[in-house]
Amino acid sequence: MRNFAAVLAFLCAGSIFNVQAAEEAKPFITTHDLDLTQYLPAPPANDSAQTKAEIAELLEIQATRTPAQEKAAIADAQENVWRFADVMGPKFDEQKLPKVAAFFARVVATEDVIDDLPKKFFNRSRPYMVSDQLHPLLKKSKSGSWPSGHSTLGYSMATLLGDMVPEKRNELFTRAADYANNRLVAGFHYRSDTVMSRTGAALMVQKMFEKPEFNAEYDAAKAELRAELGYK
Image 1: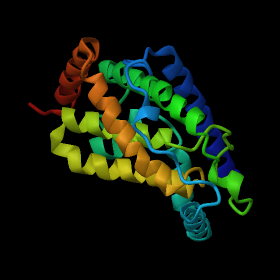
Image 2 (image 1 turned 120 degrees about the vertical axis):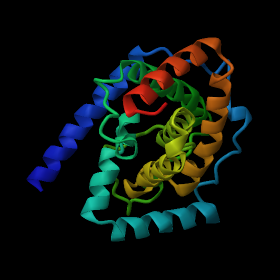
Image 3 (image 1 turned 90 degrees about the vertical axis):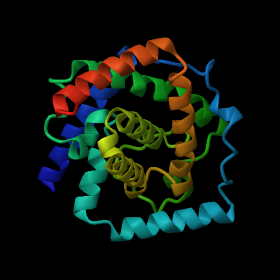
């Protein structure tokens, strides 16, 4: 237990650092460019049959999750592109890829801005606010649950990395799905939160590609990444 607590403290510290880095980065787009409240439907009500079914699913996940699954869910609480290193390989290193690091820091900052509005607008209660039988693995958040920001970010990063390195596209989207599913393992989101994030991710990436500044940084990051990984 002591070692597990130490790992959790280390990962939380890393998450704080990542949040600070994202706050210092400039978003590529804002809610003036993309207002997700105009595209996403309202979430299921707390007393709806769907929410009750989703709570039941989360309770089942909580009862059967393994220590390894818990560790992975806690690790995936970090919001950065380096969580995809298990797909991209050992050369996918922040120190060797400064342009990639700077580019994806701005993507993280963009997601934070874009998802903040619908989270506040829809204000869906987190699962553990609805059921006191749920015990999340991470420090509780009071922000809205709809959509899952982590999942939006994961699918956005997979889309962009998959465009840069199409040779790994399938593996990247499988990893993004795991990243999203770990929000359920952690007891932080309903499945519908993560499913809805796919829409937000697709819209966010599409809108970013409309910006010349984004395209310039994307091209530079792609060139750096493919050269480092040894792709022509």
